[in-house]
Amino acid sequence: MHVRADNEAPAPDAVKGRQTPPTHDTRRKPWSGVLGAAAFLTIAPIPACAGAEPAATAAWFPLVGAAVGAFAGGVRAGTQQFLGRSPATVLALIALVVVTGALHQDGLADTADGLGARGDRGRRLQVMRDSATGVFGALALIGWALLMLTTIASLDSSRAFTALVVACALARWAALAHARATPSARADGLGAAFGVGPIALGLASAVALALAVALCGPALGASAFAAALVVVALSATFVRRTLGGHTGDTLGATVAVTEVAVCATLLAAWHG
Image 1 (cartoon, helix red, strand yellow):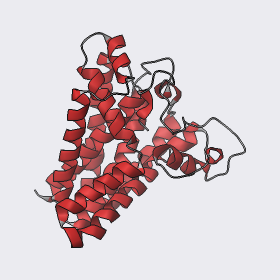
Image 2 (cartoon, rainbow, N blue to C red):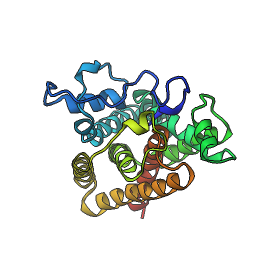
Image 3 (spheres, helix red, strand yellow):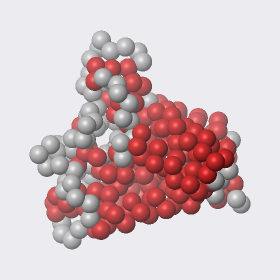
Image 4 (cartoon, rainbow, N blue to C red):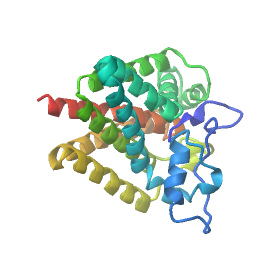
């Protein structure tokens, strides 16, 4: 979910190489929701026919996010003994970006470029659809990478694994909450097509909070969830005022910022 959707004017909000949330089909298998979420959020070679209706797909976002975080955490743990914390963390972040097809980083860069542009809402939205990355987008990506690197590199392999799993799970939940809390800024595109109902958001919230509490404990898990909630509240308020609502790119930016916020919250608690 991000999404890389707003890059190309010829195909508004069409994530390059990605599917938009699949449409309803009552013949889908019971497990099609998690497969649809995995196909949408990762580069996993899952056929389009495995998808589910948007509500069923959205409910699985935190679980798929946790799997993405576990993959990155596994890379960190597996390479640390040979390379040390910092190089292993760099590889873990590369793995995180690759397995998601740079989906959320693309959204972060486009959103930063759009918000940094001078002009009205229409001008900002136009800039966000430009495939070129500008200065603001580059700075946003550098900031994300540096914050994630220094945060995760400060943790031992066990806590780094936990932080990545929890952060990635809560970040995908945050994108759902961001979409639910704001109208679409456009009448077309992924942002407009990505509808999140209250039941799907409720299920995703329960899964995300349960994962955080199970891995971090009640107090710290709740704190991590609260950090994600703060990002949702701030991002929703900000895009309403600057863009008139969410787009596919602002969903991806919300994911990236939430990853940083959750990892920083966990680091502060563990080092406190």
